[in-house]
Image (cartoon, rainbow, N blue to C red; front, side):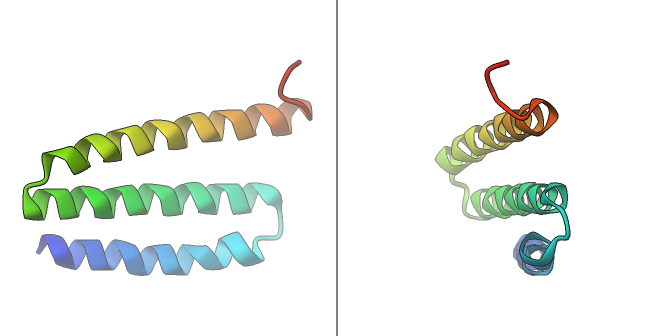
Length: 85
């Protein structure tokens, strides 16, 4: 069951990659890239649960925090046009 969900999220990531490549605006591409990152962190978490790997759960948490910080930086950049204002 868990591996089936992991495969499902991987397929969803492939579908969302269309938006990252073709997206008409930069915002669409950023949201698509963030969505792929979230899906991949879910896949890693499911693999960690399936194979009982506690270290991978810590790596997934760190990756999720980096994804959040990354989106904050992009939002600030596109709001002001520069990062240090």
